[in-house]
Length: 280
Image (tube, rainbow, N blue to C red; front, side):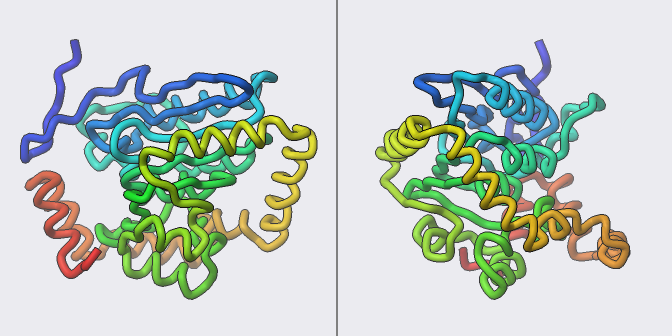
């Protein structure tokens, strides 16, 4: 049995498991569930491998027309696992952006069902889905700036427009479900009790429509964004000028101090330091 590791402040972080992402299908709909509820479905290499594999499974299954993506427990995903180093993993794995682009490029529509936190990589994962249904308790945000990080997948400007994208990225605040609805991050907001039923209703309706046309319509919308430059925007790390700036960010003493608090003081101390000055 693998020893369960703990953060410096005693929070248990479960070891990687083949059940970290679950897959099931019913009536033309595949349901993929992030299944690390004790750490709010934080993403590590094992989750990324499993999620990518299950997306490929859904793509290749002729009985599947629509995919629902959700999280177990009280959150969709709290983003990247800041304690993944507790369980060293040298095996090859798709990056977070690889997983996001797999969702984007999947021929079949993907619907995110979000309760609780969808922040950081979790925000981007929900953002690249074709529809996002949120429970009233959902919280959305690109919070990487709070610890000196940039978004792995720059989907926000294509979801919300220029001014709101800068607000979301530069403040690092969390948005309520209704705030996210107002600016185009989600399609619908329902009560927590209705989230599963409403998402399945939409998925089954989509699955019942002529599938060649459903897939063509997804492709056409994506093509419009390709023409608008989304692929170049997502590949921002390949831009030499931006790469130089990102390389210089490693000298950011404030970000380094926050990462030091995380490694030495634990999650609680990090959150207190990170959230200082943030109202949401």
